[in-house]
Length: 211
Ligand code: DX5
Ligand code: ZN
Image (tube, rainbow, N blue to C red):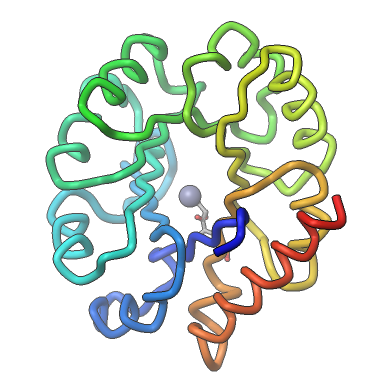
């Protein structure tokens, strides 16, 4: 297995056939699970009960992306439901350091998400405790800046990018430093999601070797 991980986003799957959709992506590295609360984000998706259903339906580890207000108060819901990785937004957290270390003590990989308008420099004080940084942008400049910061601190968290990833741009995003790629429509709206996951893994790993 290569070093580049593909995380299909269940938000783009056919929710009326959740188990069937998850079976198609059994070869993926993570299942990306977008929780939106209708407050931090103007949309409402799914929460704990659907997360439990996902966990019952697949062996692929679940990457829960909490687009919610006050995640410090609710992260345990998702850890209890079986999330393997949990990321919370920098813009929504008041106790970021405490929340991340709390999750890690529970054995959950913990990370921070930055919206496109949030500069990477806000991570300077927290970078040494994060397992994952999730960037909501395919802007290669962000990836380069984050990689340089990680090198300065001697750490190598997973660097995940979410939104708009496809076989057309994955190489560029990997070369900019990303190693976990979320792909929603590219995977679930394709004719053959399993083949698409394999293609993204292959293209991603080839780009990583060239980088
Ligand atoms: C919210 C984003 C996604 C989304 C990605 O975090 O909206 O995770 O499902 O979908 P694509 O890959 O189609 O942009
Ligand atoms: Zn997401």
